[in-house]
Image 1 (cartoon, rainbow, N blue to C red):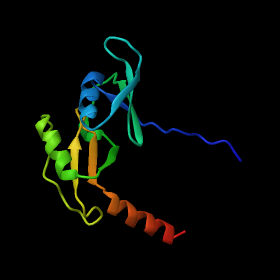
Image 2: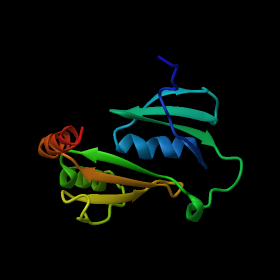
Image 3: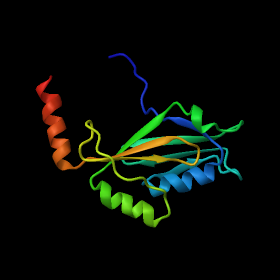
Length: 136
């Protein structure tokens, strides 16, 4: 079997790593490693099923040019949105696009990156597994 690259972790240039950490902690991420400098030069964060790294940007961040977005899932989107609002996060109304009938919100992190948080419960997971296994 040929060798393969593993553990893909997006690396985001951010204006202030400490601010980004506080924002992503509200979404469920935890810091697992940093360069231990003050201020931080880089940090790695994990959540269930994913990871991100932050690198302090050397130039100003232009939110209009952020060409990447992130998709996350929660089993109770309405409750998650209420929790974020209680923590001071600006949360837009839940939308219900055809591809995510359970609902979706688009959050914007401190550097302008979009995070789509989708409702995905056990029923959605079961239906998805049945669909992908039927196609194989």
